[in-house]
Length: 315
Image (tube, rainbow, N blue to C red):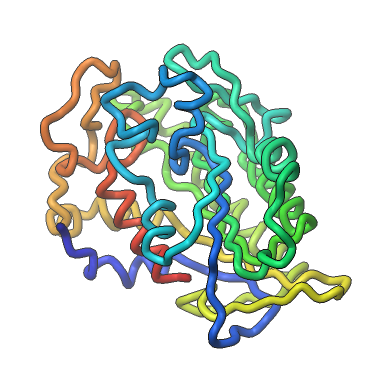
C-alpha cells in the first residue's frame, strides 16, 4: 500500500464548484452515475465486443490493470455505481463518432448518446435524484478520431450534455476536466503530434474556464469550498429554476503533480514516460506499479486509486 497524504492538498485544490444552494448538514449520496470513456469504463466495451476488447492482460474488461477511479469512490463512500462509460467514446457521436476494439471499428455511444440512448430510457427515480452524483469524464477521444475537432466545440458538447442531465433532474454533477494529452506514451518519439495534442488540451482547459463561468451564471455563484458536495442537499421541489451543484475536478493538476520527481518517487513510480504495456500491445512489464501509464493511453490502477481517493475527499 502507498500513502497519498502528500498529494491530498493538491488534489483538493484541483476542484472548483458552482452551486446554487448552501450546504446543509446530514445529507449524503447513495448513487454514482458515470458518463465517460475508457478512463471510466468498467466493462461496457468488453461486453459489447463479446470479450474481445480490451485484451486479457487488462483487468476484467477495464482499460487498465485494476479498478478505475469511480470504483474507488463508490467503494469508499458506499455508493451504488451505475456506469454508462464506453472506451473510445467522444463527447457527441454526431460531432465525432467514437470507436473501440482492436481495429477501432466498434462504434460506441458518445456523451450525448449515453444520455439519450442509455440513461433516458431508465433514469434514476425522482425520489433518488437528490442523493445521486452524476459524473462526466471524457478525455480527448474527439481529437483522436478527428484531429481538427475544435476544443471549444468539444466543451460545448459537454455543456449540452450537462444541461440534458439537469433537464432530466440531475442536481449534483462532477465534471472531470481534461489533462495534457501530449504526455501519453502513444506519442513517444513524435514531438510534433504530441505538441498538437498538448495545444488542443490547453485550449480545452481555457474553454472549461469559460464553461464554469457560464454555468455559474445560470445555476448559481461559485464557491471556494474544499468539499463541494459534502452536505449538499437539494430537494425535489417544483421550483422553475433547478437547484444544481456542479463541481469541476482539475485532472491536469493532479497528473502534473504526480509527475514531479519527489511525488512519483513517493508513490513508487519510476517511469512516467512509457506504458507498462508496449504501444504495440506485444509486451507487458513485470511491475505495473512502477509506471504512471498502463498502456499507450491509460493510467495504471495505482494512479486510478490516487485519483479516486482524492475525489472521495470532495464528496
